[in-house]
Length: 309
Ligand SMILES: NC(=O)c1ccc[n+]([C@@H]2O[C@H](COP(=O)([O-])OP(=O)(O)OC[C@H]3O[C@@H](n4cnc5c(N)ncnc54)[C@H](OP(=O)(O)O)[C@@H]3O)[C@@H](O)[C@H]2O)c1
Image 1 (cartoon, rainbow, N blue to C red):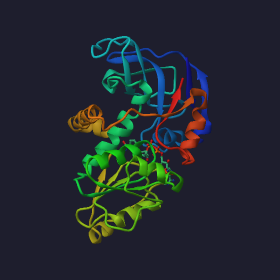
Image 2: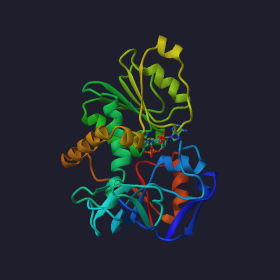
Image 3: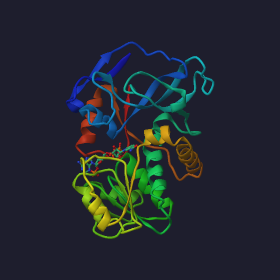
Image 4: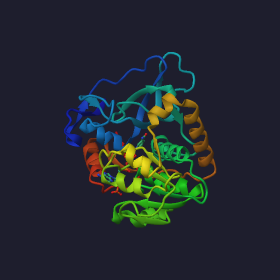
């Protein structure tokens, strides 16, 4: 089968299209013929080796895909051959992917695979961030990188939860972010008291987030480091007291499965209620995966990106 292999720590230029044996489903696993793979910021970090506990080159890249179940490993009873699924597992930038049945879900009724991409990685992350941030109606929420995959989901959900939604994005994306539901859009974190900040950027923006969080009750949910590392000191928290909350979806799944299940149940209800619409990813051919990741890195993309094998 064809697959995109990361061969170095040189970033997206280290991706090569290779021919490799089709994987085989082991106990508890399913084999999926991939129809589209989701491209995520984490894929970009992995190409530089900056994703904590990420794979070591050479590896088949990608970890989110949708497609058709073509074989079941021993012990799998939750899916049947022919089912269309969305799932997560390493090696998704390929024609076939093996993943644990537990890491897959059926598509929402009437949705295509491509329309479903991002339900877990974008929408579940956004909803988990808002829930961990305990967003209440009437509060002010700031969503960073609001034109992106997670960002647009967070804007829409925060608005649904009754928040006043502030957002940051590159200036060329501001109109899109307003259309997605933000009340006000900025190029960087605004200097005003904010109740909940969804922090996916870090770097120099982190100090601005810290300063903007409302003293005592303000919550900062940290779930990304797109702009680089940032530090916070005990002195800062002592004299500008705010609440810092970390989020990693994989850790949430593994360490707090009941909380993750609540997030998925709420997502299902939001899909049924029409709050979460089918996605419209920008698609690239598998062979153009390096270009897709380079576009993500250049901050020129909006919304979800996908590769078609
Ligand atoms: N913790 C988790 O479990 C989890 C799960 C999913 C995603 N994430 C994180 O959520 C974020 C969004 O992920 P995504 O896949 O949806 O990507 P994305 O938002 O579609 O793309 C990243 C966006 O981040 C902004 N950005 C990139 N580099 C930046 C920099 N140096 N400084 C400031 N902003 C920068 C850019 O937006 P603008 O040009 O508009 O500023 C860019 O379009 C990422 O940080 C990702 O790692 C975390």
